[in-house]
Length: 394
Image (cartoon, rainbow, N blue to C red; front, side, top):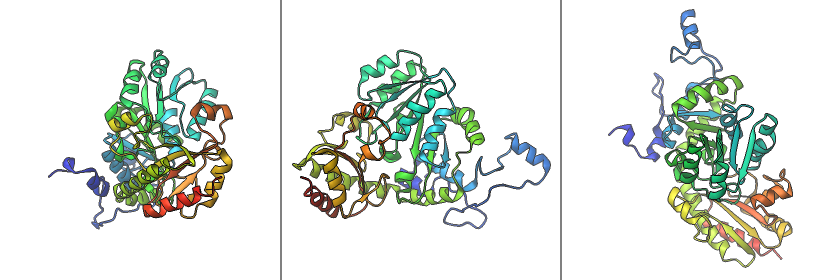
């Protein structure tokens, strides 16, 4: 039995482990900024990348490397680089390959900070950004009829869980000469494999499910060896979006329970979505596992699980959305997700509040929309909490 034959749950516990001479069972934590060399010649060779020596923890660290190898094995990527946050991962993956005059085509349905990078920051650098409706194949085809540098998208999207046909978009992107970057946070590396569907780069906010306990910030960028070595690594080393060794160590421990946690969270989310769909005070529910989801068939083809996030629209707009939030007793009001604790947020006033009314309307975010991140509590308690909160809605 070789490591290549292991199941993903086994890789989550063992992949990338590098034990010291002490033969410890738990991964070692190397809290060091720098490393010493046996002689001056070795130092010079290390800076020329002619040795396997670590040179500085901004470039790489033994603990960080274990995390990167484990994530790469889980994702099916050749190389992973861990970053200090999810947004550091997204920004680095974009910025390392962009120059003035380049063109990006992106799905309009994005996390608020991702949308701000594309809509406000990159255009100031002379980068053209074209937004499309992610579920409209004709819009993708039209936008990608012109040579393009990057395609960027989320699927499922934040917060309304729009599903984009990855095989279709990736095929169109290749014809346009574009690299495809997929933010895979909602699906997690357990339920969707963008690289197998044609994407070139995958990004994560590891703060979410990968940590899964609301403790720290981290991110990851994964891709093929050529891109990661020639484009991403030089940018990464010089600009310093590095994860700390301590945070990497926490992530290693978190990965050991990722599949168990996400499975339970997904079961809870599915039960909540079904309950919400039947309630008189709920106008609509967005969950990839429901046949009522407009992209249900695509989700079945490219996702092996529906995930832990549920979005819904409550009748009565913001007033009733706030009344619902304020009546919750088990769920916490928080803009984070993927946590062991169940969290609920109102996107229009939190994660997407910096967008104009027009921009939110284009994405489809309304004042009555709420996003639930299901945790590890008993599903009956979560459903009871939601039902009693809905009873406070006029």
